[in-house]
Length: 216
Image 1: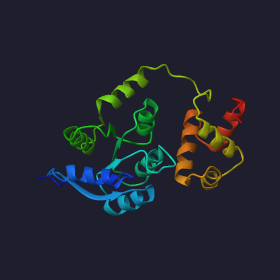
Image 2: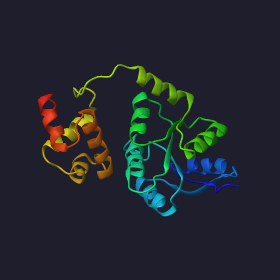
Image 3: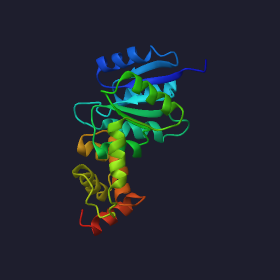
Image 4: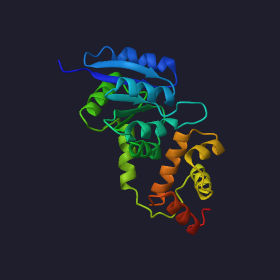
């Protein structure tokens, strides 16, 4: 038999982690090598265990519904081989699915997916394929069918506008995090979204573009 799929479960609820472990360890080709409840624990665990797959919830704390998005970017954006990230969450929103993909996720399924479909998704990600359940796949299709808008800044969220204003003050990711009571990793994620939405590659360009659009 080929080497088993080494997998890490990241979810802030112990009962969910234990339930996923009990389901997945019945499969002869899957080995759960660890669990994590927070982004810090997850990064340490992944660095130590080097799993093939990370099952990742988007909500990892009471203070944020999408902290997992920033973690996804950290897991997939570093140097060296990155694990395949499969989002397993209760949230279904077209923008969330797209943001997860942009952050590097290879798949997106809801927590009410049945065990057979979840295992199939894990195996697909391990093969280098994408894996979406019917709901998230429909969200992707809808987004592809939607007309594309130019970078006019109107799709910046309220939080991203706050981040843009702090960029105009020259603040670092750490300083932005302190100002907004979020982690530096989450601040970095928001900065990346601002750059992407304004179609620029540097902070100074974002500030210039934002000022021209009247966002600052």
